Image (cartoon, rainbow, N blue to C red):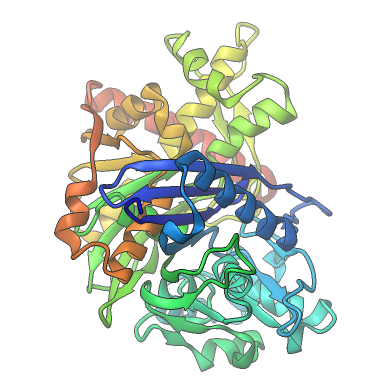
Length: 492
């Protein structure tokens, strides 16, 4: 029989990816299925949980076919997922009670504002490392308990929990990294917080058991999942999985994922850094009984701005056009796109900000607008990196990048120019799936330790900064003026 493979299931906001990884770190096969975005009301974003499950099965089957592998050759399963999205399902039938409420959904903005006005913000941050924002699962669950019939008797969880339930036939668990994104977890202990559950009115018995991020956590049932019987041996939220997949295993190492949104994480080890600059403090992973932490800057819209230019305005026909079109002009001509379509995340945390396109002239063309959208990814990330340095006490030394947009050389170079540090892109930019596979491989004994994971990471290209620091500062100052326009849409 051929050498075993690890199957990583990466369930994201716009689709589900499956990667069959050989034990030498080579991708043997890959599958992908897009999922439908539902927008029933302004500010609401939903997914169909059954479609999520079907898409994962289809992507996994495609990955195995592409790899030429049989179900029996899968030695372990790793799961990574869009994090704060809420799913509710019946414990017996495993059928969803309603559509999933996606992390981008803003329906609980007013609830968060009421909690903030009542003086709970500081205590929430102290316990959870998070801010009171509709981004996180807790207020979504409180809303669902009031609005969805049967919710109080349901199983509730993030997408990883939903997939484990369907893969195993009913196990109800999550890992510490996903739990830390719910507003319901005490990140000091890695356990559910009775205090936060009481504040939000959430019964603890509907929540999943919190487990380590690596180890034999559950098992797939072959009659439920493509004939595969294997341990589910790694689970992590998508951004923590990307941090692990980028082999950011030492304190101070950092990565940025350019996906639908962008997420810059710096590993802080066992030191839990309390942010004063709009960052989140999150559990990176729980391994060998020890919690590791990260500082995170969550940016809601980066790659999604290119989707908007494609689907909403028809400015481009495919996202692949963005890089060449952005490079076809020497600058944006003073145009800035602030993609605050669902508010602004770190470091602003302004749910009422709205998108702004400023600096337009009669000479502005589609290339300038597309370049502005690409540059916005780097500008927002630079804002986060600066705030993160203020919290951690030191600037980043390098930045490892991944995600779909990281294939754009222009974006990577512009990011290096703004930050003034090397930007390093690995050969495999879908490091979210890679991280899930690494965690599963370690959890199942396929690999021996972190040193082996470090050797599996491979550099594709390093981008050194070329722009003067004065020029970078000038561009960043103009960008921040544009951000204030976006924030003033409601407040001004």
